[in-house]
Amino acid sequence: MTREGFKKLCTENVLLDGATGSNLMAAGMPRGVCPELWVLEHPDVIQRLQTDYVEAGSQIIYAPTFGGNRINLTRHGLEDRIRELNLALMGYAKESARGQALVAGDVTTTGQFMEPLGDLTYETVFDTYREQISLLEEGGADLIVVETMIHIGETCAALDAARDVCDLPVMCSMTVEADGNIFTGGNIIEAASQLETAGADAVGVNCSAGPEQLEAIIHNIRQAVSVPVLAKPNAGMPVISADGQAVYKMEPEAFARHMKILASQGATLLGGCCGTTPAFIRALRHALS
Image 1 (tube, rainbow, N blue to C red):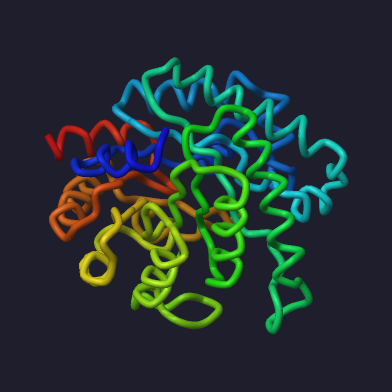
Image 2 (cartoon, rainbow, N blue to C red; image 1 turned 135 degrees about the horizontal axis):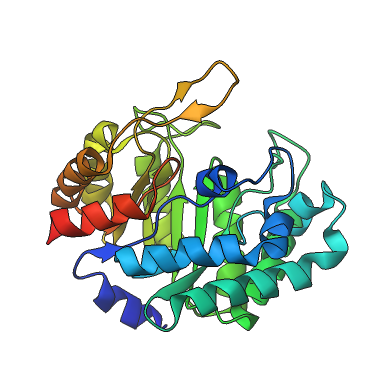
């Protein structure tokens, strides 16, 4: 997809998909494993989930390449399989989309901090993202999403890397506290403006909190930028069970009602994160229609 085509697409509401990780765990993925490797070995699980999202109304689904960068894969001893994993997982998503939805190559944090908070240099982070995004483009990504980011410098490095290797649309979303502050400093309003200036085609928030807590944040982002605004929150705030599991109790219809408010505040790219399922996307589609 061209950047101009993406801009035209976002003149109306665009439905994203819902959660991947929480649904994989519900389907049997153990804690502590590398999700990318587990998905590679269980293609039926991810393809059933993504097919269900497309049937529910998702117009953009995220490829299960979330942690497929070299720094993250090295922690699992999988750095030599980066090409295999990214190309195969992108292929799974393209098959699931069946030409009925666009597929975003999904990129996230390396899990380590950049200078001055940590030891990673900009050059190392840039090269890490450049490698993965090159593979995602090769695998047929229609666009790139840089998501669940907690550091503006790392987000900019990923965006710079994407701009260096391809001309695909790039969506950037950060995870924030309920007041809009970013966990490593700064706030999402300033970050959104910075990312637009750096060349992002859409900016916003994902994960973070439930949709009921993001109304002011989405409104303020919309006032600060001219590019499309993305909202992909969790199914409310989780309750931690006795065995340490995060339990999300918001129902699809309640989620959809709150998401409709976020749409009224200016978000046009709308989906769900942790705790959401295809039923949430279906309810959202009905609420928006």
